[in-house]
Amino acid sequence: MKKNNDRIAIYPGTFDPITDGHLDIIKRASKLFSSVIVSVATNMKKKPMFSTTERVKMIKESVQNIKNVSVDTFSGLSIDYCNKKNSYILIRGLRAISDFENEFQMALMNRKIDNNIETVFLMPSEEYTYLSSSLVKEIASLNGDISNFVSNYVNKKMKEKT
Image (cartoon, rainbow, N blue to C red; front, side, top):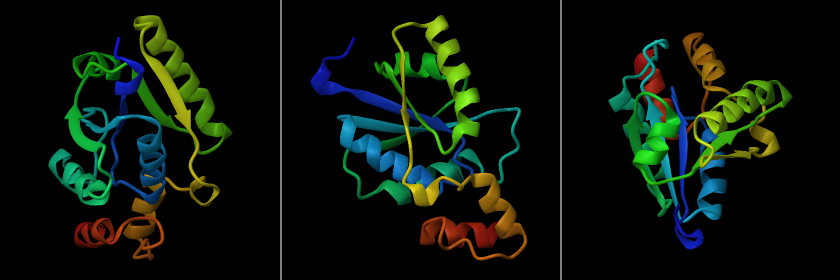
């Protein structure tokens, strides 16, 4: 177990693409933990719009000014990844009550598999509670303006894809 003054938190997700809501959670986590690893999951069941490499680049571009945040990738169980990174903290964002049931179930399952892993739920600012990557992709696919939901860099990359 890591010492309290050296807390490494893992924020896993597909981040397809990273939104301002994700960034809000990352910024909040960066204030609470000595190090935050934003880790892009490669999930064979999902068909992302962006490759893992593209998502990592978008995240790196988005978090470049947050000193204690790094970006990585993983496949498999997030708790195995935590152990590999010598972390016992998983960050999960909760936008609304509808997120809670699934996230709660996942946290309890992770605890059952490895009771050393703690899940920390963070809520984004109210302005991001409705925001999801899926909605951003849908708006972009219909030629809508997503500039209020993602960084300029991500917005540019979305326009290239749609």
